Image (cartoon, rainbow, N blue to C red; front, top):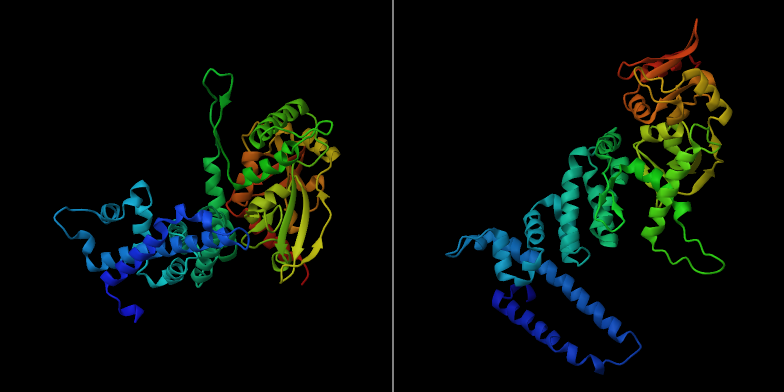
Length: 432
């Protein structure tokens, strides 16, 4: 039987398969054209390569189990043992091979083992799946491990390691513990940076820009229209994509500087927010919503969406239980230019205590949030700079407009969670 073959017999079979491939380059001219001849041959060789990868993992796992990797006069690590006996891994991949083999013995990783042995996952992709699954497990609700692992395997099989990493926000939004996605995205904001220019004397300067998921969504939304190819008199735009994007970024800065202290006539951003019916009826309090479309959009945490919605045009796309579009609402402009000018005069700049940011670098914030049905009037508005706008939302601070001898002013209650207390008081007053 096949399962009772000795190691030596298996070596002979594999050697025979290798000999069949050894002279293939000299006989390809004999393969007839059409009918998928070469395409079918390539597919079979590719499948054979996947089977070889899976076999390598199984052999390394068994060798570790038997203790063979530490045998011999020369003391070697497992990775060194793999490099010694599988010379092709000396160019890279030995560490991933060992990492996957080490995880094969854990029952929780059985779906990954099956996917590798079936040729669905390459070793490189499997290593990323295992690492991502380990990072996510402590952040998930009970019982979410299996569907999350299945999602990682599916994305890695279709899109490789990059796709596996990119699905992390969506998995956290659906299966993460309450507030975990928001915490992850808030932490990412700390790493936002723009380096000083590096010049090499050629007339160009290089910058390194690091953005969080929100910054990326905003920048890409702004760059999209400006960086599209622009034919001139019927001639193609021959600029490379990177060149168009770089020139579009400079154009954005020029427009912002040229605007000066004037009030913009357009929203600062346009958000297409995709949410399911349950999230909408719950007041957008789910784990996360998608901005930019359900298939290609960016998953943002709810508090981030609430903050962006303070001063943006919002197009809600509401999905049913089967993912069908129930409603695609019109864009709503929350604060008009006239209202913004009034706020500039009333507040004079950022209203957060101790901040001196001028009004034209602030956002109009809903004191009772848009998601909580706060009205878009001056009595429910306050100017906040970008930094303090984030703080007010993340720490859930409540503010109110007070009438004093010098006119109206905004007062902030900087007790952590004071906004939630405000909502509770409002709810208690509402009739059942």
